Length: 184
Picture (cartoon, helix red, strand yellow):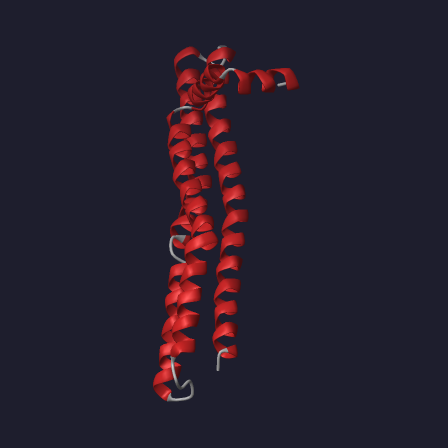
């Protein structure tokens, strides 16, 4: 695909939709399942980034304000309240990360399922027509390789963002801990 073809995909969205449809047909039914998994995965990833951008900032500010409003910070009860605030922030920062991890781990297995179903199709063609029908075998091989590639691409890109989100959650909670310590 050259630059001009890519340009026309942006100019003509109908052609882009046809390209996606053709790609899904080449990859078989499992590729549709990988696409749905990808949409859910990226929806959860975008939700987490939006959460850290606005809601977590508000949550931290309210916890710090509540901590600073307390008259004493040294008692056993005060330390338990501080731990509760940090635990609450940690739970909310890590929300949906386990779902993201499951979807990232699931993507290569869905790709592998596509490989198996594509190879079954190749063997069916070979059983019916013999090994001479290269066109029919190529369709099965396409159905075997495209889902594998798609599953790996989804998993690798999702893994990068999962790691990024985990680090961001840990850093944000650690920053809250430090801010609550400074408020003493």
